[in-house]
Image 1 (cartoon, one colour):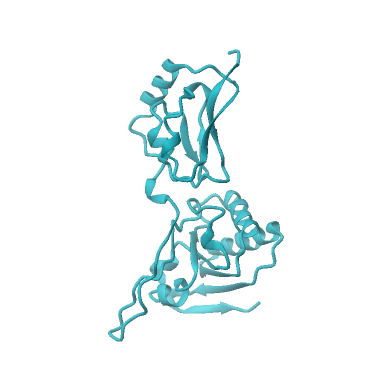
Image 2 (cartoon, one colour):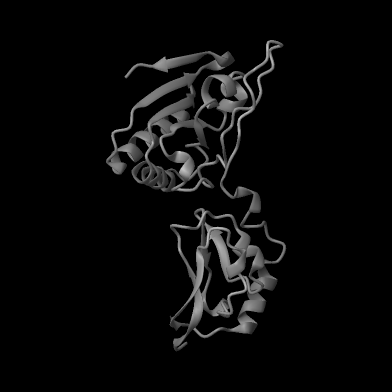
Length: 236
């Protein structure tokens, strides 16, 4: 198929947070969320009319004129029909936001939520965000929240939180993403909270490798959640 000079969508990945609003607004199915960023599936699916432009909260979408495959309306319709009913590739609630933590625990023993940011899953968090500036960053294993009852009080309070699992997630992709988060933001210090199981040692390797790649010297403290909720601090 010969390429033609025409108008087509352009996505600024530095601004894109992967919220997925553009996916929902594109009737031709030309956009998906991949690796936490909006991507054009195929040029032929994009009509270049820009119906998605006003739906991006970050202003990451624009129209440019460049060489591209001609818009194929029939192919776009066939693609939409073929993917209809599949698991959504976006989540509008994944838009980054800052959360005001609740008041300190009352004398009654209440332990209110202390979460400061959303989303928290490493796949969904933005690579650059105001919330990282001067922040203490907590990187915790997915399971820590279920194994440690005092997690909110002892670790999440006062920190920006990211969770990940080295056993289930794409480690190499996450190393790259973490390294960019470290390199491109003014992070004050890091706290690593992982489980005692051997596979969770991969979380430490992931974080230390990302630090190395970032070129940043960010202080790191490591804590291990043992069975029955006991926490051990790892000496440097």
